Amino acid sequence: MVGKNPASESYLRIKSRYFSTLCLDSEVIRLPKNINECDLLNTINSLNTNSNVDGILVQLPLPGHIDADKVIESISVEKDVEGLSPGNVHAWAKAIPNLVPATALGVLALLKYYRISLEGKHAVIVGRSMIVGKPVLHLLLKENCTVTICHSRTKQLERHTRQADILIAAVGEAHLIKADMVKKGAIIVDVGVNFLDGKLVGDVDFKALKSKTSYISPVPGGSGPATVSMLAGNLLLAAELQKTGDNKKQKECLRHYYTNYAIVPDTNYC
Ligand code: NDP
Image 1: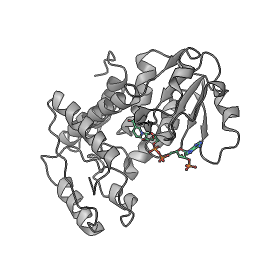
Image 2 (image 1 turned 90 degrees about the horizontal axis):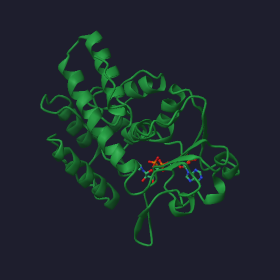
Image 3 (image 1 turned 180 degrees about the vertical axis):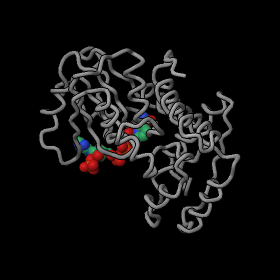
Image 4 (image 1 turned 45 degrees about the vertical axis):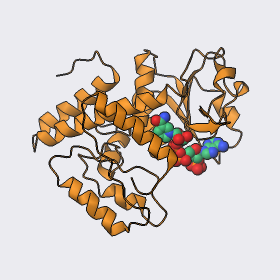
């Protein structure tokens, strides 16, 4: 964690608390906001080579003087529990099971947990970031959804959202998605985290949409907890991958096992 950021502090608290309930050790390394890039890279490098460390996560955003891509790229691919290093991005973009951004896995986990059939459904994702929109796009394509992705330059957003069988909102704008922007019976996963009049709310107007949708995830209590549990799953996978050394077959088996087990708890692969 570089510098101070109230939202990041709250994410860190939630992650640390959840990890300790699972008896997973976690440590927050706090670095000053004026740290230079070289010192930050050295810190990551020492964690990369520390065999007591199974997973590394750099809390984003980083201060402007630091190249976030360079920092993320410096994390060892098997310790990258956020799934954002180039090797992991390549894997999820090619639908190869591996470390995938936890928030995106959490979206899929919610859909799978409620046994929502995905094949052939039209999914509309609002938001195209590397931690949510893009990995969700790939996960849903793998499930044979037809996917539309919208962003800040999309014209007439509501024309797209109204066509969604499944709508994923990952923008960061309180109540951007209103009742008249969604068709009856749609399924909504709200990833957004915003404060409105001092209250935590999502990107979706939950109250107005609750009775119109067939499933809708609340904020708080939906995507957030799903993300944290998928992050713990990523840490377990990372730890197991590092234990197997060069055994490629075992690594492949572990990747299949963890990515499916985490999402569908009763799946038995190995
Ligand atoms: P980013 O800011 O990286 O991305 C936001 C995306 O929304 C961008 O693609 C942007 O478009 C798009 N966007 C912005 N305004 C509009 C608009 N008016 N209409 C349509 N699209 C728009 O955010 P993140 O992906 O990191 O996070 C998104 C939300 O999810 C935030 O609220 C964040 O706090 C929350 N979050 C929740 C987590 C959880 O566990 N539930 C975990 C991580 C994040 P463009 O690309 O054109 O700029």
